[in-house]
Length: 278
Length: 98
Image (cartoon, rainbow over all chains, first blue to last red; front, top):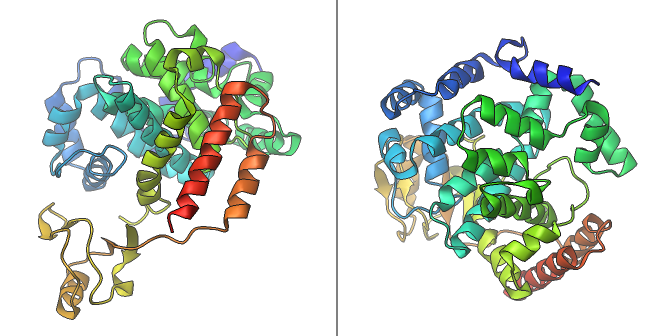
């Protein structure tokens, strides 16, 4: 497939007939660069399902905030505009994931959990933001599903049969991977570079520009999530950690054991029924 | 901590996470023990799931280690092999704790 055509189709995702109406509405909010905190709060508060999901997420062990966040406006103050925009997108693609690629949601949550733990270990200022980058790192797969459903589901199947990495199969077929597609769409939606870079480069962390550490963390978190075997990312095999990431993060073996240990409880608590029991 | 549906709840089990109602108010704080009447009340309040003390059931250890072996089949670089060793050590710890 011609990569220009692929990008062109992805860029007009809002007008594709396959996009769910609620997601379309959310995208129009996210895409508006001048949207205010108040406007988003107002929008989310009129939708009880969205409100419940966002509150459930911020109160879940994925984030580990002490105490209870009981309103969207409180979540806004704690997380900030960009993180809430990311979270809003994250919880609104849940159905698409559940319907088309079972396990992708669990993989995304697992990556978010590992990202938060590693960011905290590295004493980054806002581990929640890195965690949201983790939650959204595979958003490109959802975009592929919306824009090229039949083709993409076939690719997943063929990666499984041929024992290839899904990003290699994507590159062969579309000329571009889910990581870059996710990055392009995150740019279109005016996400900050701190979110765009980890999404765009989570398979090529060495080319990140401004947010090398954040990108390295999401890259490693994705690998740890696949290694731990919770959820389904489309990969049957653990991909290698890039040597650049490894040098940048500089973890000892005991520290990796600690990270796995720390993740165990939140991974289990978020489990399969995370949003399906609302 | 395990998550159980309210119809599996039994008196004497300890709640380990605050139970909140739809408007976000805490109706039963963490630490309290379930009683017959409390379970009845919770069922009436449309609380479906609660978090209680207990350990989840783990699949057999050999099976878990075997799956890890399979997932790492393509790996031959040192950093990623280190992750594999760390994960295996973690799994051993997880099963030794019980």
